[in-house]
Structures are given as structure tokens and as C-alpha cells.
Image 1 (cartoon, rainbow, N blue to C red):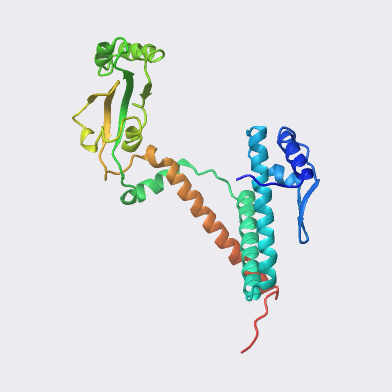
Image 2: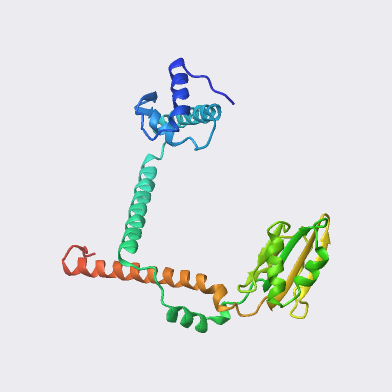
Length: 283
């Protein structure tokens, strides 16, 4: 929906469309509602980058209209809301929580390092394997997708199953011009769900992934899919260390953060008590 504004606003909208290419702020006042003023620089900051001039004008119109409507409603609410005291309390609580959160983040960034040594990672992994079970099968191997009409499809059937390095070299050369997807992951674990993203829906099931089924070929529509499995772990198995290493690091960093903030609060409390900065009133 397009909104119609006075001509001076229209002119400003045109300059907004052009000023998105500049970093210079413009504090020209565009509109006033009550004692609040909307400046052109604020509109500039709220227009997404990359829009055409015409789309920038429409986005600016919508933002201005929304700003006016919100402030008109705010003015009415301020005059007519019965429970203003509760609103003020909620605002105070939110402000306090926001200040505390921002300060805690500042402390964490200043005082804590994100480095977790390998020994700590291994210790956590060895002590928590019951909580590190796979929620999906994992595989290592090779995945290729080529058009049915691609050249040398029969050769691919031989190359992708082979353990000969020369076959791997042939595939590497072939994929440059012919493969739609070529994913070599024999050196890292990949989840079943990630494999599913490369295939049409329901064309690969968990039953297709077994330790004894080393090679899978499927022709679906205009494409042929080749999957070679070099290693396999069932759902419910203990996750390999390298697969969960990043998650463990994040867990330990978060725990370190929690412990640090808890100690900081306790130290602050004790210092305040010792200095007499906290006064308890007798009942």
C-alpha cells in the first residue's frame, strides 16, 4: 500500500533513495508527532541496502507511516492507560536487566579467554559419553551427482568404488566439468540429514546406510547419484570425538562463563557486606 505525504516529504524520500549510497548522515526533520521528531537519518538507517530507488522510496514511505502510527498510538496510550505505575515498574526492571546483561558480557569479554585446551576437551568427552549419543547415523565417504546424459557414467561406476588413488584422480578431473555435486568426505563424519539434502525427498533412508553396504547408486529423474561409504556409525552410538569437539568446546566455554559470573556476584556481595554498603533493617 502506498501512502501520500506532503510534497516536502516526497522530495526527502527521493533524496533518501539516493543517500543510501552515501555514508553522510542527514538530520533533516521529516515529521513531528507530539514532542517526537523523525529525522531523515533515522529513516536512512532503516532502509535495507541493495534496494532500487523506487523500492527504497516505498520502504521509506512504509517506515514513516509506521512511525507516525506508532507514536500516535503511544500518545493516546500515555494519556489513557490506567495502570501506568505497573508499566513504569516493568520498564525499570527491563532496563536493569539489560544493563546487567550488557555489563556481564563486557566482563566476560574482558576477563575470560575463549581458549579451551585439548586436555579439557578430552576429559569432558571421556566423562560424558553416555550423554554424547548420536541422534542420526554418521558416514564417511564420497557422494557424486551427475546428469544421466553426462559422459563416462560407466567409468564413474568403477572409479567411485575403487580404492586406487588413480581412480580418485580421475574423479577429481571429471568433476570439474561434469559433476553437479562432488563431495569427498572420507576424512570427516557427515550426518545422515546432510546427505538427505543432496537427494530428492525420501530417496535415501537410514536402512540404506549399513556397514556392509559400501556403494549405493540411484537414478532419479535426470540424474544419477553415487554414494560410497567408507565408514559408518549407527544412530545411538557414542559420537566420535572429532564430531562433537566443537559442541564440547561451547559447553565448556558456557560453563566457564556461568562459573565466572557466579563468582563475580559472590565477590561483589561479600565486598559490599564488608564495606558496610548493604544495610539490613531489623524486623
